Image (cartoon, rainbow, N blue to C red; front, side):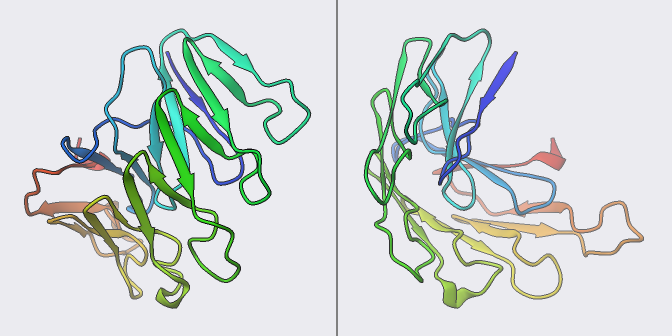
Length: 208
C-alpha cells in the first residue's frame, strides 16, 4: 500500500524517482496539464522517494508498510515525521524557513531567502547540487512562481485563453493539448508529445 505524507509551508509530499544530472529526471503531467510531479533523484528501496510539484514544493511518497516516528516538539516541526523506517528527516529552524524540510537522509534541500515581491521568495533552490529557478512575477499568472528550470532542463507553460498555464515544453519535448471545448470529452487534455531528450523521462498520465 502506498502512503503519502504532506507538509505545510513550502512543502507538499508524494514521490521522486530519477536522478542527478547523470540520470534521467522524470516528470509526470496530470490530465489537467498543470499539476506536475518531478522526480530528480533515484529511488532507494524502502526509503521515502522525494518529488517536487510545479511550484517547487517538495514531498515524498512511501511504498508498502512503513514505520513513522513523529516530532513531539512544540514548534514548526510538531506532528511531522522525524524518521520513516530507517530514513532520518530534518527541518530548518530559522526565521525565513522555520519547519521547512531540510534533509531526507543524505538528500539536502536549500531555499531562497525571503524576498518580498519576488516569485521565488523562500522557494526551494537546491536539491543537493541540482539548482531550481522560477518564472518571476512579470510573467503573469500562467507562469509566475512556477519552475523555469531544474538542473539543465528548461520548462515552459502556455499563455493565452486556450490551455493557459499548462506545461508546453520540458527540455527538448513539446507537449500539445486538445482544444478546450466543453462539448468534447477530450477538452484541454494532453494529446501528443513531440521531440526527444535523453536527460528526461516525460509521462502524460492520460496516455498510459
